[in-house]
Length: 435
Image (cartoon, rainbow, N blue to C red; front, top):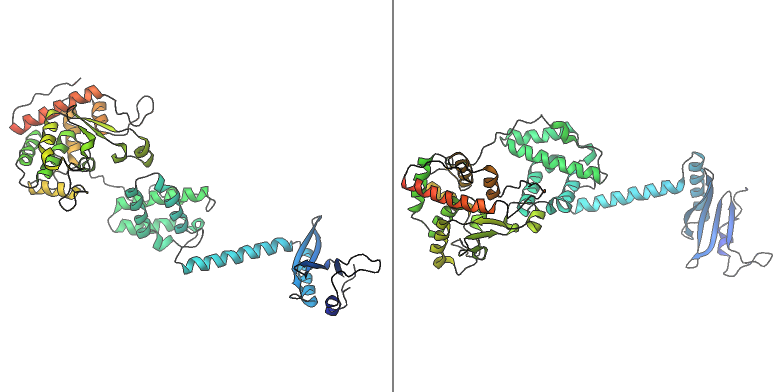
């Protein structure tokens, strides 16, 4: 096809709306040859340059701008560039789309950088998306917050701005070594676990293809497990109980320690107890699912945890009722009755009684009961585990069953309370086999 069929810009400027050709037909376009033409009055009275080409057997049209912003000479240069691309086997339309996408990406990156945000597809960006979209809906708010802080303090400063796909096992290990060298080996393992979840989320969202944290299975020092300190020797347990009975501090603190010993529930569940959860006449304590140590789903949909109360536990609560019974919380704090006493309060009380953190903790009452019920009183472990509210599925796959071993647990709780009384008085105890 001949080229440069449009004589000059004057030819274009001379056109008037409604112009016709020699046959009287409306003029809709001017051909310049070899695929370049000008569509007339296409956009608010302006004219639009178009370049038509064929690539891989398909006919395509590329827009080259509007007239008069794009004059005849500039339109021809643009058409020449497009022809060169077609001759090389490159689709100019696709090239333009790619350039626009890259321009938009760079613009977004500049905006994110100005706003202090990490680059798209970076480790930090994907990690924060995972924290918000997945992790926050699976674990408790406190757990999610701890995970966020671990990543912000131990990973983001070094790997945060790297593209997720470029984070290799050696780079991740170098980051974890910094945590390990501080002596916080357990934290290093927790950070590695969180990073693994970020990578798996990145695979699902198309930001990477594999999880390099799996290659570090044996690369970190093992965690030395330190269990909560707990007394299990009968004589020392008796001394502890007598010390608690004579505790000179707040009566709420003393009652909380006694309830920890008698019910062996988690300290947080004891401290946060509300009077509405108790039926003292029936001798029951029903802890709502949302206050239990469970996943977000377990807290929302799991049943309440039944704690049968011994006569001694009921007596402790009735003695406390005149003091705090008019409030929501059984153990309100001194500074604010809307907040319970803290875990630090219980630990400090034990230390004040002469039982240091290396010997006995508030959480240690659970281990004390777990060990002595099995070894001293011969109670079946499934009954103990059910009362400890450990999430062990039953035969039907239920993780929580508030009626499981209800009769056996009621008998066990009374047997346990009676046993503690004998230790308190220093009497000799003969082990029994519970039903």
